[in-house]
Amino acid sequence: MAVNLYTFRIQRNTPREDGTLETRWQEFRVEAEPTSTVLTALEEIKGHQDGSLTFRQSCRSAICGSCAMKINGRTRLACKTHVADAVKNGIVEIAPQANQPVLKDLAVDIRPFFQRVHKIKPYLQEGDETDTNVGKSAYEQVNHVTQCIMCGCCYSDCTMAEVSPDFLGPAALAKAFRFVSDPREGAKSERLKDLSDPSGMWSCARCAMCVEMCPKDVAPMEAIVKLRTRGVDRDYHDGAGQRHALAFHTDIQKTGHLNEFTLLMRTVGFWGTLAEMGSALHLIKKGKAPSPFPHKAAGHDELKRMYEIIENNPLDVETKADERPPE
Image (cartoon, rainbow, N blue to C red; front, side, top):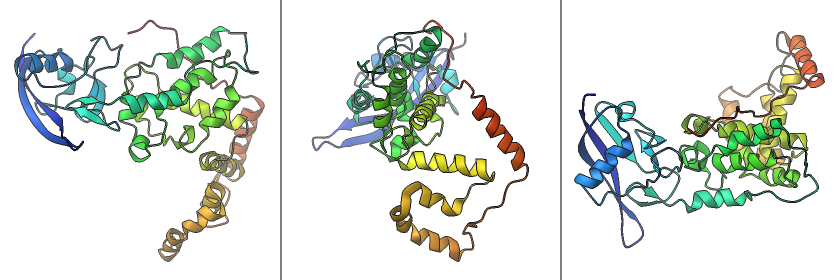
């Protein structure tokens, strides 16, 4: 296979004595085959051009998750990403993961990420909800999320983690679903109640970046949706996220239209609505205030029948995954 010359534009981060970082970009020219991995190219740079270049790597087989980094704007595993798939206009741009403190060059401090994982108590607990009847369906639930290698790709590209430092993040929540869905777990309700906090499962904006970026097809957002469903089934409706979702459900079922006029009040309550009066007055001034009396949508009777059919014949919407060997 032909060998091509590629430009690698790498973000260099050097710690200063005052704890800040000196950030600059440095370019390297590397000869590589299109099917070579980005990690191989980085090793070539470190071994023959600049030995001070710092990055993490270990297994080279997309199992350990150590080499996760930003490659042309998206977080990926360097050992799994081919140069030809990453290059844009002849350049491969590489930076450290986002939403995590940078230690040096492409190496980030992974402690905050794992602290979030530890918050969900990543182990089975004894309790009254333990079920000893573990069937194949239950195994499929657990197996779906145990493919996670804790690489941090999902957290790095998570739009909510970028604006909400307290958010548990998709990896931790997917790990939480692994235990909530396990029949052997004895404290399922307690877990769901804890996860209903503002920084938990309802903070997810469902941008689907975690699904797109996950190198092991774990689909963390799908697990988060299932956590929410189980939480609502147990009547954990105290948070703004839960109330917001229920408001949508009630309005669509009732009229087929969302009642935006009362949505804020039903989501954040009186005081939360009062805090937004400035925005409300601005909308009224611009003639964009929603009507307090939404009309029924066309075909609402058919929609109502669909709701009744689903409620009388609930669908099995649990997360499933075929058993498969590690990639």
